[in-house]
Amino acid sequence: MKIAILTSTTAEELVKDLIKNDNKNKYDIDIIALPVPVISILDTNVISKIIMKRTYLLNKLKDSNIIIIPGLVRGSTEVIEKATNVETYKGPKSLGVLPYALDFIYNGGKLDKIKSADEVMGSVIPKITYKTAFKINDNIDIPMRGPPTIIIAEIHPDIRLEEVDEIAKRYVNDGAKILIIGSNQKTDPEIVKEKIKIAKKYAPVFVELSDISLIKSYQDLGIIGISTSSTFIQNNLDQIPMDLAIIIGDRNIKRLKKIGKDLINRGYKVIIDPVLGIPGIDFVNSIKRYINAIKSINAPILFSAADVTEEIEADTLGIHGLLAMISIELGASLYLVVEETYKSIRGVSEAREAIRIAETAYSLKSSPRGIFSKLLVVKQEDKPINIIDQAKYEEVNYIPPSYNFNDYIQINVDYNTKKIKVLFKRNNEILAALQGKHAMSIARELVKRINISADHAAYLGYELSKAEIALKLGKTYVQDEPIIVPPWKGDNSD
Image 1: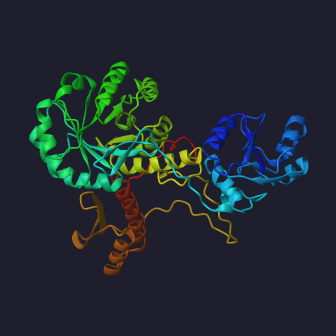
Image 2 (image 1 turned 90 degrees about the vertical axis):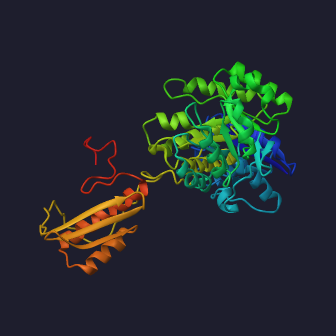
Image 3 (image 1 turned 90 degrees about the horizontal axis):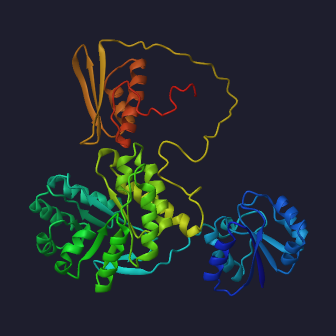
């Protein structure tokens, strides 16, 4: 069977590479590029007109048994079928699913003229194949080139010893496969040792190392690797045990190449870190370093998000979303997260979701657009649907409160216990002091116990819902103040 696959000039080489590497059914496939940069934005009527005006395209297509067009193209394929006199069907929306559509045809399945192949076949997420560079702890594959991409999380030097158990456990639950114990010149080695003991209960542990005299004591505690500079390696190479994996960081790409290749030739497990730069200072140059390192060093690459998430004054959910796509496109094997400040807290879970989206897009050979994302917290993909009903609504303008000022409600959020606290006073006497995580339940309990005015009941529900949102977002709750103030607030827009 001969199959013609219609594509654009932009995607032609991608389709050829995909078919070359994944045509196990040995179809005779002719990849035909229309003279357009993007085919998916067209409809079938436009495509048929393009074909009819170009004899060479028409002749090529007539020589096929089946024509497949991208699933995103609008309209029925019947109009193309009439123009070519060849059966024409919708393929998948994403290029990565095309081999599955070809398998579907090979096994007797029939594609549709209106629905995309994805809709006909059901949801398909292609598997990612990769070459393993080496294993960590005998159970974690480190790919030579990602994806998949392994999350590695640093326990920052400023984290107190008594916090390590809770944080290490959370990092792993949030998606980290490897932990790094951060340290600097001021860090007490004895504290580092205690942190290693705690963290290794949850995941394999690396440690940042700047003093070679500590390496044996750290290794005796069970570390599986070190993170350090190429200069440190250069000065202490003969004292580093062969069974430790090494993360080498350096902005000097020539030195990084030299030391990295030397270690690889000696048989070490090496991970290269070209150091992602600070936006506005070194970010663009650092991407060039990554490209250079990936092309010239045969070792896994570490992509560290820390300097970007910490230095940009914006919510880290979106930052991780973009950085994860960049890391996947570069082929990074590991993605390092550091929750150094409060604004970057839960960054590991954000990175896990960002990498999931990026890996899915990669496997589909598509952009991440349209992939379900938990990173859309404040905004969403589609405009809200305007519900229309038959009721006639009366306009309600501002109504001032009508409170009994002998009654007083105080609402706070306790971020340690993760609970909302409500105090109700009447004539300065405490009648109720309640706490909980669910705003509605607290409100119900309070109005059940105390006869309060309708105004106070409405106010209570409104403020408790704000408190619950603040608790979920980890934002400071101040009674009678807004929780979310968007940047367009006050610019005369709705």
